[in-house]
Every structure is written in C-alpha cells, then in structure tokens.
Image 1 (cartoon, rainbow, N blue to C red):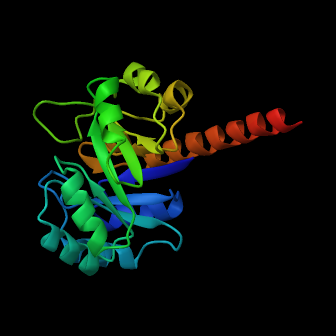
Image 2 (cartoon, one colour; image 1 turned 180 degrees about the horizontal axis):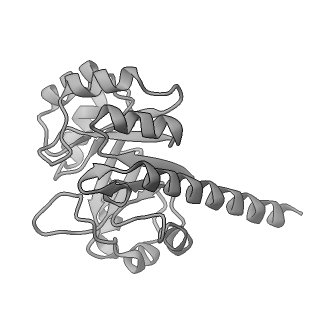
Length: 217
C-alpha cells in the first residue's frame, strides 16, 4: 500500500514530508486554494527528499499546456481530476511515458465500473460533490466501492484523517490512500497531523504484513 499527501505548496510543507516521508506528494495545478505554478512546484521539488515521487493534479487542462507544466515541474505522475474522457487520455498516453491516474467522483458502483474502462494506470476514488472536482473533505462512498470491487488498482481519497485511516483501509482495501484536508489546520499543512498520518499508515502496513505472513504459514 502507498501513501500520497496532496496539496503541497509551501517550503514548510516540504520540510514536513521530508521528516515524515510518504510515497508521493501532489501539486495542484488546477484552480484551487492549494494551486501552485509549474515554477513553484519545480522550486519546491528541489528540496524534496530522494525517493518521494511528485504527482501533478490537473482538471480539464489542454494537453499541450499540461505537458509543458509536467516538463517544467519535472513531474513523475499525471493525475486527471476533471471530465477527461478516453479519447483525451489516449492522446495524452501517446505524448508521455508518465503514469496516468484518473480521479473518479464516486456516486455509485456503476460510476466506478465505467471508469475502469479508461486507459489509465490507476484510479483515485474520491467523494462526489456537485460543486467541485475534489477537495470536498467528505468521505467517499465506501459501500459503492465495495460493491464495484474494482479490478484496476485504486487509491482511496476523500475525507481521510489519521483517525479514520484504519477503518477506511479495512473497508475497501485500496492500493493506496490520498490525503489533503485531513493533514491541514486552517488551510495549511500541519506537521503534527502529517506525523500522525504517517505513523498510522506505517502501523497499517505492519498489520498487513502480519496478515500476509499468517496466510503463508
């Protein structure tokens, strides 16, 4: 299981994730309170601890502009969080070798099944909001995810915190988890909340390792 911390935008945020490293951090390039420019992301990445990969979050971005940002910011992964369809994704795939993730605002099991047909490497299953593409802070529809039983690898997002992380993982068994608002206080990343999440995540990984060992003995 992997951990992504999204909405990184300040030098302090980089110091926090360096101290308590996730697998991925996310830079938001779409209009948002957490938005950064390609230049800001590139500057922040220079101070990033080795081994942490960078994910660029885009919403309905013209492909040419997306690729320019990806190059300038030296992104490792592209995350599409808007209404991008199969044709858009196929075109993007032809232009880049970076992994492509697609966020799904889960309404029901069928919304997940439809998204599994998209030519992406991974789905990010998020909560649904009629007024925003993400960052609602609401917990995703876990029962719908269980019903859909996705065969494509997926990360779980939406309203996750250190307090509900264990319950979320036990509920849907994702390949990874993605947090943003749950590691903030007053709209800014909070060092202690990041520490708590990373500590809880490591405990989850240890527990999963014990379960795996139990199955093989």
